[in-house]
Amino acid sequence: MNSEPSGAMGSDAHGFWKFGPHETPVTIKNAEALLAYLPYHLAGWDISWAGLSSTSDPDICIEEYADGTISVSSYGRSDTDSLFENPYDAANGLAKKIVHVHTTRDQGTICLNAGAVEINGGLVVIVGDLFAEKSSVALHLSVLGYRLFGSEQIAISMGSDSIGTCVGLMPKVRLPLPYDCGDAFREFVEGYSSMQNEEVAYLKLWDREAAGFGESAPVSAIVFLDPRKAARPSIKLDLKCDFGSKMASIAYAPHINASMLRSGLTQFVEHIPSYILRFTSGREAAALISKEWHNATAVL
Image (tube, rainbow, N blue to C red):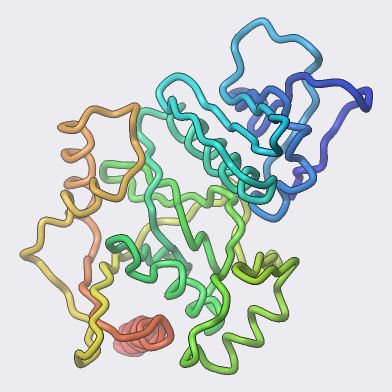
């Protein structure tokens, strides 16, 4: 993470910080309250101290309360206010708000609740409903050697450009691991954990295993996950499903009205092969995707 603060400040100062591109930074008040915890959740973002005052309102404000709780508030198009019980969860919330504020600066870009890996030079974007194991499938693909672009969220340019961009959120895994995740996955989690507690393992992958913030690649396919407890695993192209609506339901785009969002995503999916994947575990789903793309490459 370039998330090492630059510039100097007094130890008791509570001021303003800038995150991200110098042209369009995300401004945060009192970020120092969570800077020590942020590297577990966000990587690759430039961070600089901006002083004790600002000529404009911050995009995000952090407040610490006497009972130990922490409030992380964002303003403008992504107006939300969240209260957290501990600094680790607060830093996680802050990381996601930084990504969301940054994404809303571009009218043609949205943030998808999705995983993504690079296969044969293109991004396979993994989407699905809540609890569809998107993160698990993406990380199992990383275990198989594919480069991770995101396990939780990825920025997508709408329209016919079909570009996906890494937003710099660090992967994490819920603990305990599923009994059927496999030895390779257990070793992967253990080897790349920067910290673990009883509930979560925070992972830090090397550059060759994971893309960095701002790194982009063309989207080559979309895979919609359909987990089934007892079903024959399968992956197939689906030309009948309204993928535009499905994508809109998992998109973060408060800066785009609903009709424009659906229109843009419909145009987006028209140019990209879209698959339905039925599976019973993240490990199984990753193996199916790997096999499908290996076979496609062999045919070519």
